[in-house]
Length: 326
Image (cartoon, rainbow, N blue to C red; front, top):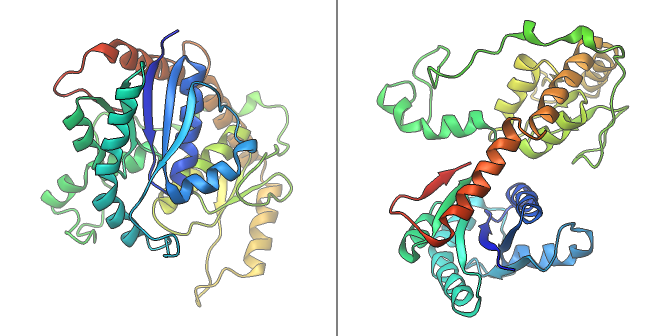
């Protein structure tokens, strides 16, 4: 049996590898063959945990290419890592794809690349393979990222990203307004806290304590638990805004005048979450919305099936502008 063959390549950081690995397993369950490409450094760490990785099979293989950094060098310097990846990996990826297509009856039909690996588009175009860009962040962050040039042109921010206007920014006129009154809080008989399984931080009494990367945000939402938010960098501050101000399913930890989150602040916020029934109800309602979207015929399920069909239909034909964003 022949499968449509897809190559997936994440940005070499855990918060990027993990969601794309989840996507890879989802694709194999839906009848696609997957080659998952890590850097050699990441590959060693992944393979050492292979016994704990679900979904590895004959139609999913994990391979590696060098990232251009010596094994002893510091990969926590994201600027240095990104520069090395940009300079060294394109040639190696092209060689890998050519080797696969030369020696494999099921040639690569599509590349799914992390949107932090934009250089992959040139490789895909050169070889003539469809490309889909994968965003491991929220849709809000993706919309903001894609609007940066527009925000600069309209003098909302400067080239350094500093706001020039003190006002709310609407990125899209078609972005729906979230009306909290449409959530049916009264449908929940119990306001008890749920349980978090396998979260990135230890949970306290069913609370989801995290630094707010989008992966763990989705994990907490899927489990219907309230959040104790402690953002650290990047999009985590935007995620905190959604959790605390839009969805109203958590509270944030505030720093004192010295910039420290004190133990007293943590104690106060934990007690607030444990006693706030509305936050618990909101968390369960958002969980219901998320889980319903995965059911057959609903939005997330439809989007996934449409994407898989897009890959399969294009398995034998590639247009000049065959690029997809999911």
